[in-house]
Image 1 (spheres, one colour):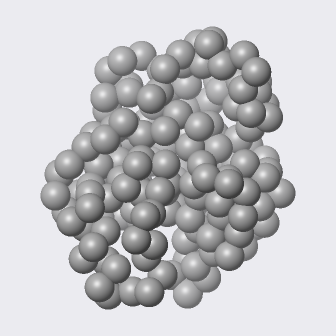
Image 2: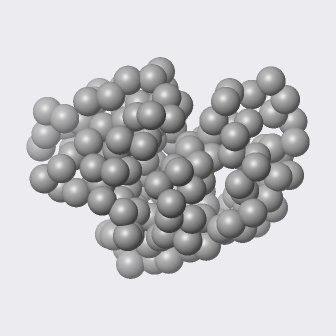
Amino acid sequence: MFGSLAVLAGASPIVQASRKILSSPLCFFHTHTGETLEVACSRTGMAPYQQSAINHFLRDFRTEEIIDMDETLLLQLTELKHRVGNPEGVYEIISAYRSPKTNNMLRGKSKAVAKKSFHLQGRAIDVRLRGTTTRDLRDTAIAMQSGGVGYYGRSDFIHLDTGKVRDW
């Protein structure tokens, strides 16, 4: 799903805008595994080893299952860190891909977990950005109008997905 960005002519505004700023890396810290990852982005996409690395990094850490993450989601993250004025920021990952088993387990614990969550498709991520408040991150993500944005102030993270534009 992470194919070359060069083939995205006629792509959404978020994809088009992101082409201009893909020279800085995406840096991640996974809050559950302690792993870190930095992937270099370019206007022509990511190398296959980077695609594999990011899919592994954003795996369901409970079951170790891996899925291809949606390229548009990564472009949203890239655009967002630039728009909030924190291009060198590190994203702290709370949740990315979720297997059906994990999603069902989480649904049993919280009404906030959707039965048909975009996490199941590799189209959603729950994050915070070091050096940026989650309120600012939320407000900027909503202004981008590029997908779903959820705000979880008590837990200090936002949810981003590549579904229709909406917020909660």
